[in-house]
Length: 137
Image: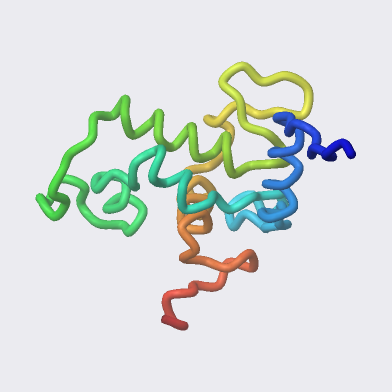
């Protein structure tokens, strides 16, 4: 009697499973006023890509990024790379790319207010409708 073996997984199998567990959600950007599809990153994404730089966190909160509140300082290059990686991961439609093709956009087309909103949304601080979730904690 021969033993049945499960088929070998492909990269597509992992993508499909991930997309099932983390579906894209329609979110209206506050500045643009239009809906985009976003997918919230898994906790592992933040581990693999470090946490939000203290200087950017202060900027998002409207504070002074140089007031010494953050224990570490990130270079502008590291901060911009982190934001780009987050946008490229979170935005499902339209996709973000440094070299946009059809149905893709360059990150500099996104208004600062919308970038800050996407970062807060990715961290679970705001709901898809834009309401602040801090009031429920």
